[in-house]
Image (tube, rainbow, N blue to C red; front, side, top):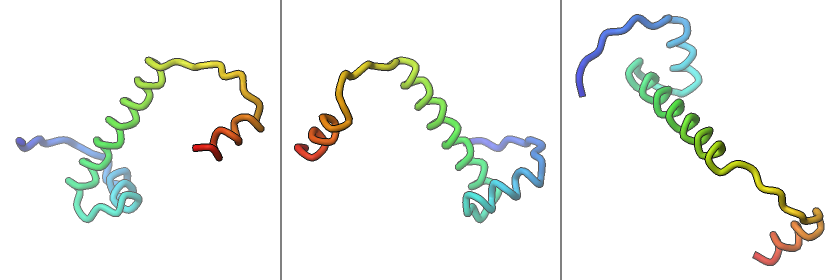
Length: 68
């Protein structure tokens, strides 16, 4: 890990700290970066998987859920 100096909007950082519950600026930034990575990975996975057509009625789907 190394030290990096950046200019960050104080209001934006304060909001991030409040919303995330982070006690430090560093923690708020780390949480934000982790969330960004998770979001981008999720979007990429959706893109790779695509969509599937499943020919099931809502009753059939409900029955399958109960049988699990």
